[in-house]
Image (tube, rainbow, N blue to C red; front, side, top):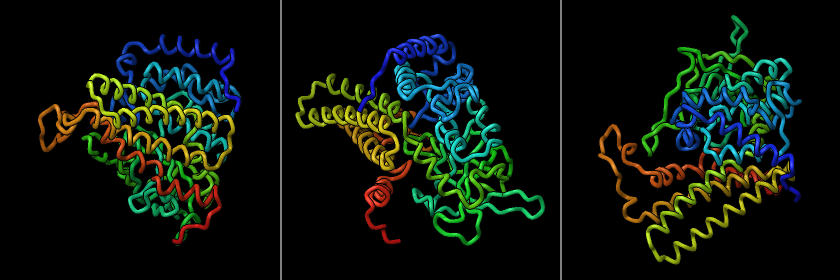
Length: 399
């Protein structure tokens, strides 16, 4: 594997660091560290303004398979994207609210969308002006996308596709302007047949309703979205061809962003290690687990770099999800174990309407949120099935 940072990358690193230092001022400076998994509710307004700031700087869409500047974005090499991501994370810049549009929808439109669709939606994403959420999971389908029941029917009066159904675990649904929705457009179809990839505007009063989901931590990172005759503005890839479009999107879900995620993981691990050192504990087993956690994080980084350099490995996204999901959950467990008995008590007063949020410290939040890491984004069971059937060619699971 040859994944080295050259002189151009280091020159970019200096420019990226200088740009971030010059623009992370005022309200943006106060928003450092806000947002991201487990804290999407924090500072949504200032983070949306920050998204537009990134757009004006040309920092959105660096990895798009499109000519440099075609949609207002600057095109960077793979190593350049890693450099930018590392600097962004190192300075604790605000958690992105536009990453779903930039990293999921945009590459999908470039691969499957029409020229008109690319011209309509990509500039708004690159400017940080239009935000997106993902309408895949459903209450009765979970990680099994082939089991979705949300339907879209062509209205005989006006010819428009109208969407009816429910999506769940939808991040940033309250902030998003648009949602890409996987829905059935062929009545009576089953599994992966008869699905379409639809683009739906969220601002449709009476037709689109967002309900926050209360979590163990007391916050609401996810939402339920109810569609009741909502109009679908576009179909990507043609009606009935939603499955290959949706699968292509999922293959793009974990790329350079995995390395950014690992920088955040490293900061969390460092905090847990400091707590252990400050406790004066002499627990050899706990110390061994902390060392193993550090070694596994380094291994995940090199695996991510190897995967990016090699490209095109069909099993890589599922392997990466299995690795980091389990690793992060174990870190949450270690965080409360290092705290000892104190981790079982909250710092604030308990009340029925505010059972947790006033009393949790960072380690307790980490423990509670990481319980979901092996479930959301495709559960461990689903990832193992994908690896077994699509990569190793083992017999399909009976259905």
